[in-house]
Image (tube, rainbow, N blue to C red; front, side, top):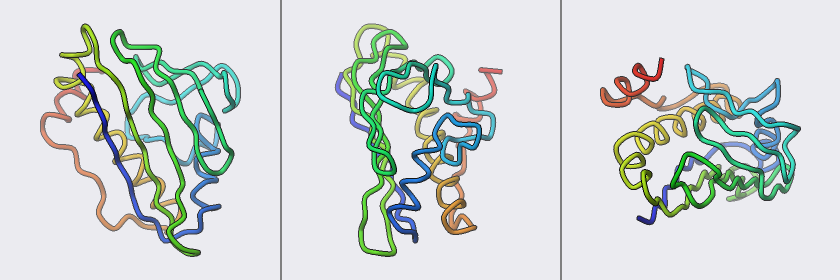
Length: 160
């Protein structure tokens, strides 16, 4: 099963400001990764190609990193996740930047069921929370905060 999942937010901020948020991923001052009870993104070393880690049961390696622009992670788990996810800061004009998260993978074996039933809903909610954090960091407010649907609340509650 092919999966292509994109979340993006147009931010009233310069590309360098939005890109700086990417640089904080997995650091003690992480300003991008979702909070609100989500597993922390952690690596065995600072954000750089070859760093190994992930969040919760989702494991990956930093495949490529262009500071303040783009980072790509390749999956190593859970079983059946074959592909990548990435954040990119894309300038729209001098004062607006699109922050995009892309997940592209082939779900094989157990992931053919776990992705659509469990991971997709949690992934979508986590990414919208992440984009809310980016918007708050760049603008001081969140125009339309993400809301979890009842199924996400159920799944999120089961993991604790």
